View 1 (cartoon, one colour):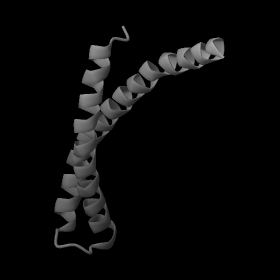
View 2 (cartoon, rainbow, N blue to C red):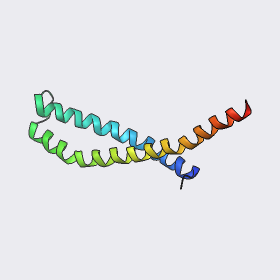
View 3 (cartoon, rainbow, N blue to C red):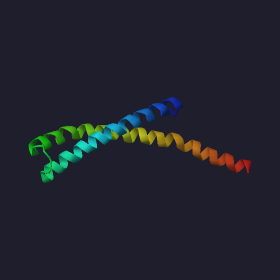
View 4 (cartoon, one colour):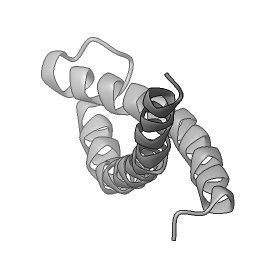
Length: 91
């Protein structure tokens, strides 16, 4: 299950998703601040609607990012531990 091709695919997906998360985070931040303080040029009702409609997409994208990041973390773990054990044998 832990193949190099799957690792490369998860890394590519993870990198694309990070950009999407940054954009969605900025939009969520601006709409959230506008709902609370009314600082920006947006109407509070529009900010509330936009914030509520984008939040499920933000949650899905964040979950995909967590899953791909966790897979990349797990993929590198056995390689690190086996490398350390090989170093001990050589010494």
